[in-house]
Image 1 (tube, rainbow, N blue to C red):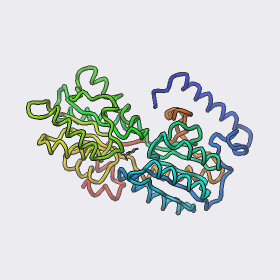
Image 2 (image 1 turned 90 degrees about the vertical axis):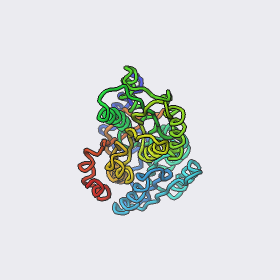
Image 3 (image 1 turned 45 degrees about the vertical axis):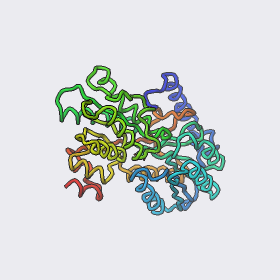
Length: 373
Ligand code: BGC
């Protein structure tokens, strides 16, 4: 949504922040629910309160890691925790009932990695009505004014880094264009998918306009490029059909593929190889073990390091601030308009990783560092 706010909306958001800051001045910030306290947070809560964490299904390694880190980190911070994953198929209904159960159990903060950005308004309102604070984790929740905070890596930046890596990788292999590429995006029910794609197109579109980059299949619209549920098999099937329609014998040569994450990147590479063609430059995201191995072996070109340990730690810091009745630290008040409000956010910086900087990028990651030796 970033950069797509209208100017007047951006201005009124600034005015709103100024107003709420003014309203806080000189008085007890936490004395009247949604009035003087912008988050609507309770006036602090017990040090061992229950914190709910509702995560989506395990579509990538980062979600598996996040669950363990929340369970251990919240325990170490003295809280009780209830960490749940949505199931693999009935994800939306699962997550909705998990959140409702957390509210019933009296959770004071509910951290949500949404399965479907637009389907949680009722549960977020229920949480708010019960006095709980809701933090959207990694994925924004849309269409609700009751969402309190958002904590994530800078998703637009992730997309820009992917777009730039694709251009750089192709140029390194073939100094002059034009380059023929294909575009993939993530699940349409995940708000991040559209933001990653916009970030990437922010870099790629000028090159497409100049004729330096050509989308071989002609499929440029985010709807044509989307992969429902971030499923590897969906990406593989789409790539299979593009290989047949556009890159079969006598067809074009594929130079690069914009892939929004590592799971899809590996599926795309599998498809190209099955078609008997050389592996093009393929981007990714998440620093998954198999993709880091592939990068070191010279197959996948790039990934993004979004250190889940940092994102979970930042979220737990927010919970701790709320526990004492304070306001969590935020560093962005303009990028994430969820359709009902601009959500106060804490955004972390993503890092692009290729074979060239992998050792440095993962130096502090005991799982990934050995793979780069
Ligand atoms: C996350 C990505 C992840 C994708 C699929 C997105 O919302 O930001 O890191 O690859 O979901 O799980």
